[in-house]
Image 1 (cartoon, rainbow, N blue to C red):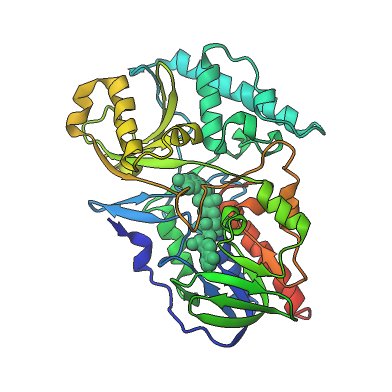
Image 2 (image 1 turned 135 degrees about the vertical axis):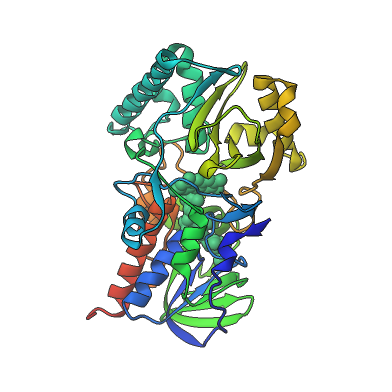
Length: 425
Ligand SMILES: Cc1cc2nc3c(=O)[nH]c(=O)nc-3n(C[C@H](O)[C@H](O)[C@H](O)COP(=O)(O)OP(=O)(O)OC[C@H]3O[C@@H](n4cnc5c(N)ncnc54)[C@H](O)[C@@H]3O)c2cc1C
C-alpha cells in the first residue's frame, strides 16, 4: 500500500537556530497555520513527527485507486474553508449524495421506509438542536426522542459520527444535520491536504519532545535538535498532549491542562473492503445496514471503485480491545455474511483496517466533549504566556472534529501569532 500524500514531498530542511514561529504538526491545522504565517511574512519551521504530512487525513493507493484512511468527507460545505478554497483552486470536488440505501437484514427497503428512516433522523436532529440551546449541558442520550423502529439505527448512527456512545457526548456538541451539505474530492482528502502543504518548510520524522516557555519566546526540543522561536502553534491531538507525547516546561496552566484532560478520545475506524461483486452499484452512497443486533454505516463504491468502507464505532472497537488487529476485519466479514449470506465472501477482501486510536501521533479520531465539558473548547483557544497557541480540530465550536474546523483553528492561531509578533503588519 502506497501513501499517495507522500508523492507531494515536503521540503526536508535542517532545523535552523531561530525562527519567528514553530508549528508543531503538519495536519490540517498545522498546514493552514503555516501557510498563513508565511503569507504574513513570518519565518517558520513546521515540525512533524510522522514521515508524511496530513495527520488524520491521509490517502493510500490500492490497485490504482485512491482511498482515504482517515477523513474523507468535506463536511459542512457552506462553512468549510477547504470547500471554498477547493473551488477557487479548481480542485475536483463533487457534492455527496444526501440519501442512500437502507437495508434491514440484507433486504433493501423501499422509498416509504427510507423516508420514514430519514424523518426519524430529522426528529432526533431537531430534539438535539433544541436541547443544545438550553443552559444545561447534558448528554445527547438524555435528549434522544422516541423514534419507534428507527430509534436504534438512528442512535447507532449518531453515536458513530459522534465518536462515543450518546451518554458520553455533550448535547452542545452534537453533529447537526445542518452541516450535512457534504462534498467529496476525487483522489482523496489526504492528497488534497498534501497538495496544500507543498513547498512548506516541513521537517518530517521530527517529533517535538518538549516546549520550554520559561524564557521570552519558546525553546523547542526535537529528536533532531533544538530550535528557538518567538511563538509556537501546537496542533498535536489532545490525547497526545494529555499522554505526555509532548511536554511543556513549565507545565501548562492548570485550567488548560484540565480542559485537555477532560475530553474523551473519539473512535471511528474504517474497514476498507474490495468487493467487486457487492450488491451496491451507485457511487458514494452511505448505506445503513440494520441487523439483528447492530446497525452499521457503509460508504459504497468510493469514487466509482469497487471499494467500500464499513465504519466501526467506539462500542464495536472497544468490544474487540486486546484482540489482534485482524479482529475488526473478521467482524466486518461476519456482519456482511449476516446480511448477505456466506456467498459474499467469495469476492470480498478486507484491504485495510485503520487504528487511529492505537496510533501514537493521534490516539483518537477526534476529541469528544462529554456532558458538562463543552465550554472547554473555548479554554483551548486561549494563548499560553502570549507565546503558545493550541490549534486543531478540538478547538472549534462549529465543525469540531473535522478537517475544515482544524483548518479554521490553524488560521485563527496564525492570525493571533502574527498580531503578537508583528503588531504593525
Ligand atoms: C477514520 C477517520 C475518519 C474521519 N472522517 C472525517 C471526515 O470524513 N471529514 C472530516 O472533516 N473529518 C474527519 N475525521 C476527523 C479529521 O481527520 C480530523 O478532525 C482532522 O484531520 C484533524 O486535523 P488536526 O490538524 O487537528 O490534527 P492532525 O491531523 O492529527 O494533525 C496533527 C499532527 O501533529 C503531529 N504530531 C503529533 N504529536 C507530535 C509531536 N510531538 N511532534 C510533532 N508532530 C506531532 C501528528 O503526526 C499530525 O500530523 C476523521 C478522522 C478519522 C480518524
